[in-house]
Image (cartoon, rainbow, N blue to C red):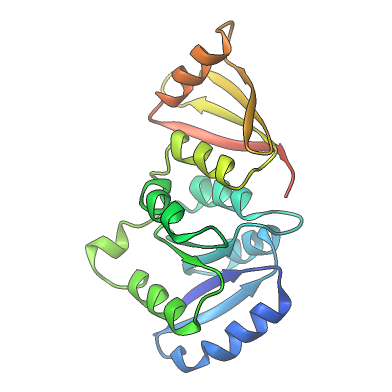
Length: 204
């Protein structure tokens, strides 16, 4: 039975091209499309999705915010990021961010199909590619890479301690954790292993 793959991109022409190009693979997987993160979350709540492929820059809810929600609510689902960043940058990042794969735009549709099928496999490796293990450090690197302006809240699950990090164009501008100085607050939050991440506000 074909598995459901959710592809998220706000470029309608791109979605139309992918819909047509991936049609020959319908026996392996069924493609569902969403135009932004909000629409994608609505699909995830209603449909049994086995893999998400998402762009990072989108209106309403961008890819970074979508990753936060997937990490929190659907940590078993692997994610492939579509990015315009160059290959060396993403090769350093992909395995550490917690996403299953990345694919650099522009790409051949056959390349995307191969990556999708590889991450829908029944092997133990494929099943362990959910985003649950995305660390604070890797999340912050992705914010810097995408030059995002946002505020995130971190909660250390074992202790309940809460901290806040604010970014402008990918640069850290504020770190709040109790009465600690900024650099010490950052180091402390980066040391948390079991942590909840929530995006308080941000710009696409």
